[in-house]
Length: 265
Image (tube, rainbow, N blue to C red; front, top):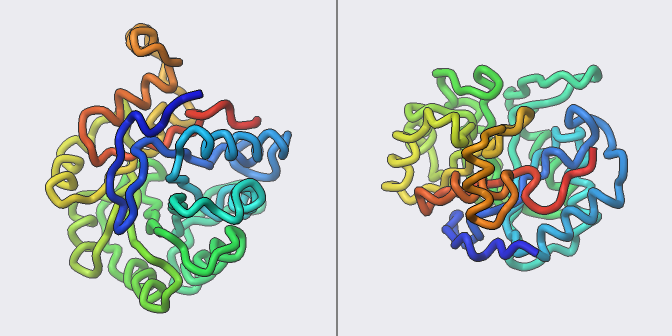
């Protein structure tokens, strides 16, 4: 079994987490919509992740929707004391499985309460405001109104730590001008490296950078070089890719979707 702790650790707010975590997105059905084909297998994947040393799970209540958080609760509640569950708000799912922005104050308040209910907790460890931008790429624009709504939910005691996702450097600066953030989650992997300068900026600020799609997302990375490097590491191509993404900078908190076992189809 993989020893996740061997990759090192980094601070996420007032918590310390292992740099390799688990992204729960693929636990739902095809297209991240509806129930998994094998619910027992999904539960087993989550328990295997924890047994391997994962203490940082990335999720959202719009995965499924609702089902992924319900699976996490079924598999792991009551949660280990060292487990940090980071969720995100700002999106919703249509009846046709489409991905929709949901950034109005009422949408964000509802999303936080949905996460609380389905995860079975009184306070969320960390919540990222996920800007839709160009779906997987950020676009400039003010985040003041939605982020201020999230800050108010933190003041109410419903959220411990704040983060932002799919954002530019200017949006990070704007968020930091409103409240403290502990993490940024953006698209980054071995072939998509447009955030290199932002990662260095965040390192100087002590803010964790959590790449999404570190293994290519819906289109997994395919590379003979990656396979060769993974072989030298004694790992699968997926695990080798995750280690290479995480290795350059200590504030990287990679969350590969298939790091521990295989998510059910």
